Image (cartoon, rainbow, N blue to C red; front, side):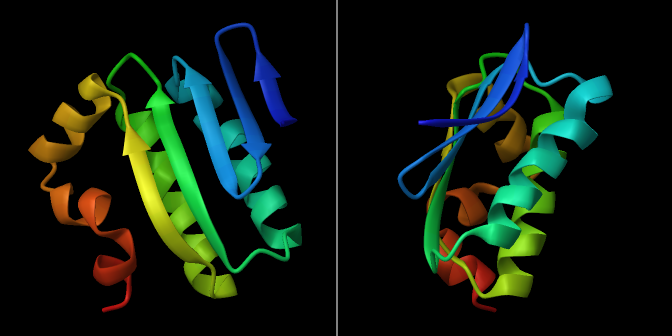
Length: 112
């Protein structure tokens, strides 16, 4: 596992072909979190990855914003998303935002 961003309340790391966010994603840290993943995505040679937010226990629109930034970079670089994993609280927030199809079938949804 490679640490990409570390703060007392939240970390971003890369393990194999997965970007992992753990902890509470606060609005004040969202830009730095996103930037750490963007840097990794811009330098990876991988053509397919997963995004794991299952360790984010607090529902936060900031976490969704980080996800969207990473998806934007993946699309630019032609990196396919195999899976998006969310914790239960974050999943409920994503459902309210009608993002179920994106989470359940990212490769199909993003191929449009």
